[in-house]
Image (cartoon, rainbow, N blue to C red; front, side, top):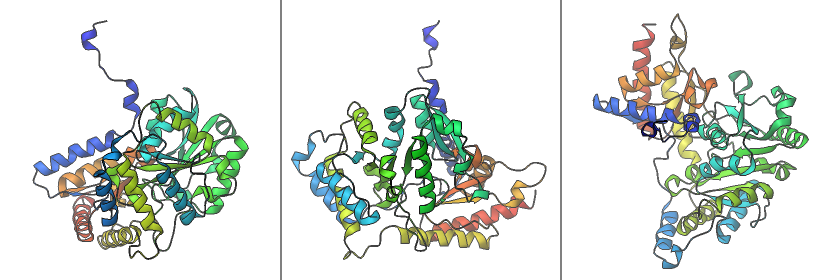
Length: 408
């Protein structure tokens, strides 16, 4: 072999599934070079920062010289105890801070490493399609096989648990679900969680629930925790994120709660690959949770902001002729392509629609197939701009639909 041609790249990187974001980034540059005013609704990155109280707690902790030692992968006692207090306050779930809560460098850290900690190469896990790219990507890294569970409109985008064959339940180590979800804001109720827990206990399968959008429920809806379900602590873990709930995306902090054996395995792995979250970041997260639990605080969290943005965008799109269902939660709208683009001898793909829209109008969205094959025919729109900009985006999209829809 001629070693000069060695690629220095693992084959599994091609199976990570996140290349769509790099592709859309290249389209953005192309649109900007063409002089387009970019309205970026592609990435789910909050455009606002945390509250002043959180920023002040962070700044004061950063100035404390004692905070510059290795923090430890488990998280500080104070951080874990505050997470436990918040879980009881928010969900009436009681946890052991020493064994049933683990700090993370954002929930994606835990999602990326969990399969490596609890599975062996060749094992099988059940993941949603479409789903957030790290779900399937983490399995590729760990050498774990994926059974893809389709999310379809006829089932209100909820996974059809009864469609999973017995032989898959028999093989699966875990099933990963996300309510309310990304890219689809499907919402599961308590009866759904009860069925899920019953099946997981029957087949001895771990439930991994990604609850990154717990504080982004609309119209009075408050997303529940699966750990509220009786018996769930025996067979479930749940990811929580400060990125979306408290506008702390750049801080990289979250936590995993639930089954102590699973948390111990993940901690054992993380003890060998990282030294935990910077102490001042944990202090800021504690301040965020304290503020969330303080009834005297005037802030109502982030839900109201995103609900207003949702209404601004969806109502404006409807006036332009594109009717998109209003999500009950999250910072995303999951939009089926306008009918004119799906009909005829040469229907448009999600990728073609997203690219042509961006180049022509400067409005960036993510094509649905970037989240899995079941996402074809849809685009994901992030509510990460002010209401006026969202209305402007809808107007540009309306012009695009009129121009290209009439030529179909």
